[in-house]
Structures are given as C-alpha cells and as structure tokens.
Length: 382
Image (cartoon, rainbow, N blue to C red; front, side):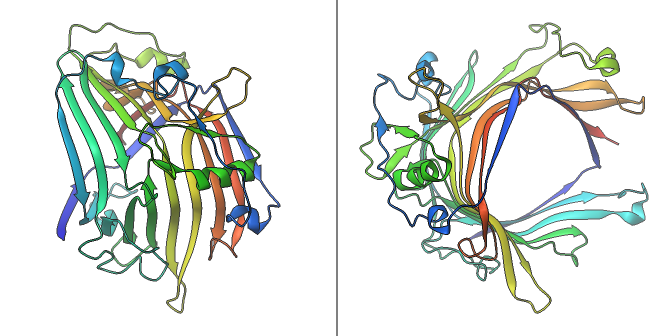
C-alpha cells in the first residue's frame, strides 16, 4: 500500500460569484413508502434506447463526440488502484490576520480502493480499510494530445460491470487543529455503469420512464456512459477581448482575456452512498448520508418534451485564467477567473437518511434541470 503525506500552505481565499442561471428545478419527494425507496418492489423492466444510429454522440445531445475530432494514436491505460494519503490545507493567519491564529483543514487517512463487501459505519475509519487485493478499476482510459485540439481524455469504464466502483474513505476531517475532528467521510461505489435495476428504482420513485442507451458492449446488467473531456489552451496574442454579462460596478474592472484554458466535459455517475461518519459521546459511530445517487442529464430523444433517456451531465466551454482584478474593497489583486461555468445536470437521490439507510430514511430527492450558464467566479486572497 502506498502512503503519502501532502501539505499545502496557502493564504485564505474569498470567492465572489455572479450567477445568471437559466433555471433550476427542485422537486422534493415526501411520504414515500420504505419499500419504494429501497428496492422492495417489482419495477417494470428498464428498456434500452437503440434507436439512435450512434447513441453516444452529439446527435442526441450525449456530450463530447470523439468522432468530431481528428484524434490520432494516443495512450491507452488500464489501472488497478489502491492509494492511502493525508492532505492538509494551512491558513497561516486565520480570520484575525494574526500568525498566532493559524488553522488547518486536514483530511486524515484518505484511502482509495474497492471493497468487495459493503463498507459499514464501523470499519470506514480503520487504518487499513482495504485488503491488498481490493483494487479500484479504471478500464480503457484514452489520452490524445494535439497542438490544435488540445488534450482529449476518455474513460470508458470506472469499476466493473456489476456496479462495483471506486470506494473512498476518510478517517477524520480536522478543522482548526488536529484535536478537533469533524468526523469521517465515506463515498462508496463511484461508477459510470448505470445498472438497470438501480435505474428502475429511480423511475419508480420519481414517476419517470428513463431508459439507457445501449453501450454496444453486450453488458447484461446495464450500460456504461463514458467520461469525456477536452482541455484547450489558447496562446497569448491569438485571443481577443470578449464581452461578459453586465455585473454593474464590477464590470468596469474586468480585463480583456489573455491566455486562457477552455474545458469541456461530459459524464454520468452512480454512487451507492455518500455519508458523513461521526462518533457520539459514548464513542459509537453514527452516520448521515445520501444513498443511491445518480448524476446525469435527461435527454428527450423523441421530441415530446419529456426526458426519456439517461445522458451525461455536461460542462461546456468553461474558461479559466489568471487576471488582474479589483477586489470588493477596492484593492488591485491577482485573481483566478472562471468564466462561463456552464453546467447542466439532473440529480436523483433515492434516500436521505440518518443512522440507517432503510430504517432512518427521511425520503428521496430529485433535482431537475440544473443549468448554471452565465455563471462567473473570481477567487483571490483577502
């Protein structure tokens, strides 16, 4: 097992946001039967949409299409991963600006692998969470770099075709000092494999009729949805000043663009559990979490105005650069500027729970139509 220690010493940050979203729909689901939330029903079979000639393509809004690029022979990787590390962020002067008030944010005992059995509240904070053979899988990772098109990355498979994905456990999150733990964290089975039975559960909960696009791999239990990303950096001198949304007085202080990086990405994820783990006064571990999380973007492939197919969430033409900026209090600062944080996605959560995912369930939640187009972010020291 590899063990690393990473320390980041950085100043405090202040982030200013300017939002101009298209819309955001929030649909809480209440008064649900436990049988519905935890698969104790007989759902209708989930069918697979095979109508599109090239299902995972731009033609049905599926996301980045590698066929539209002039990709050559890049690098192909298959990975088996198990990692252990610590990560610490140090704020040298705290809120007061006094060095005596320095504080930390530390993630202690980060462990990444793939547990063969479910991870419960009692073993997630073990120092050796994974056995030597419990390795996380990343299959068919392709990297292609081009001087004109930038870098294009595709990951076909995260985990296996049973839905066993990557597990991440964090023993303690220290806030302020190493004596003040805010608890641990568990993220279980992150995968881009959408299982038919899990999708049927979400259809039942939220009265939907989503299908999956056939991935062409003859997988019996579901379908893979590829992760795709493109990163393109423009040269200084080849860019021009661009207009930005009207931000009032802030708009007067915006510089023109110099060199910048543009990022596009499309992905879908299924996560079995995202849970915060804490101990009570008697030292008994407790948890609060989200179970059966699906992040995707619903597609309307037949034009009837109703989402019928699971597609990938999309990040489109997000630009990042370092700029001169005038802060909220009138100072000239260097800022990391993120322009056009254009993210489109739907999120469904089968159970929000306290204690036990079944007996402690508070209900289910669906968030539809997340669209942050027009959002800009400045990040700078204060």
